[in-house]
Image 1 (cartoon, rainbow, N blue to C red):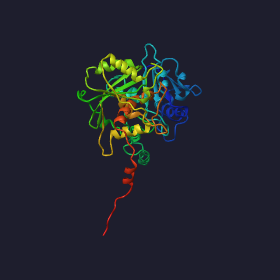
Image 2: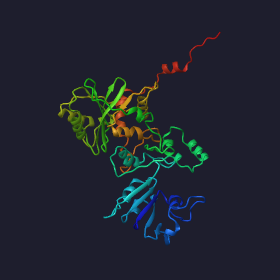
Image 3: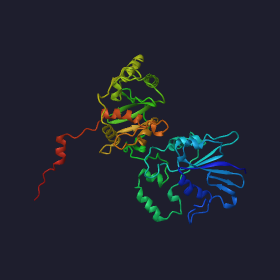
Image 4: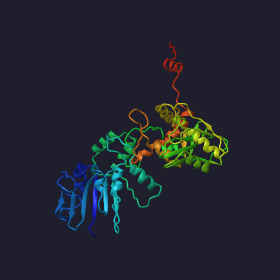
Length: 409
């Protein structure tokens, strides 16, 4: 009922020219046999397509600007818009810059059509839109977000031969197939998961209160942004993660205060697990991290036992111990995580391997992946200390490799 001004945003210029624009209007690149563009030619103003500016003007005065994500966030500065349509997930810095273009008296509508995975062949971490939109939406925390899903099988115009080709690319049950073909809302990963044995349906379980006669296990990772510690208890062979303490920008005294506030009532044994490098002096405190913990806990009258190795295990050994704890060679589940441990669950689902088989890290605060690895590192110190994967002895190897005697008639 009125003229509007909006942006149609693609990942790069070729995608805009060949995919986005031909679906909206005839830019001269509509493929043969494709459906007619959404906006008919009769609605476009005379000389309304300014190709050099990538701007389309309609007869009713509406303006559509076609933007490219590879131009950088600064190109998205400007006047307020009525709507923005993102075709595939852009860099989050671009999304943030574009969506603050709101003027008084105008309400911005944002549309995004995307697959929750990086493009095929491109490495990457978890898509930020999953954390920003899908997870809060599932919890009913953001009433302003509406999410609609569809699978490739919902499109009646895709030929069976094409479907068969796509199905051959993505094995049944794989995360890529569930996201790309089935349209499921899963955290998309562009790489190999470090903790591939973790399954949310199997390992996330409501946990009971702390058992008074079992040690409380407190796990530390000394990263300060965010700082995450975990609380759990061992139930025979089962590792139970019962709580999570998180500070966006924290220090050791603040974390100890938070622990006392949450678990100060516990009168049983407290065992502390963590990074062996925490036994060295830090620039922040000029004393060891564990000495700082000890001094803080003494203020609260809390006694504890330190269970930290002299040297950290090899990262690959820690990963193997974790995956074996999730499900061992007999198929037994050895880990349960309370749903409140959100950072830990995200880590188990999203942490990736680096090219050398270690843990991929990010030092870029703007990346969603920047918050990953800290909780799972803390969990790994506990599991690796108590249930390491031990290499076979020479005797065991011999017995496994030498076949037993057989007797025939």
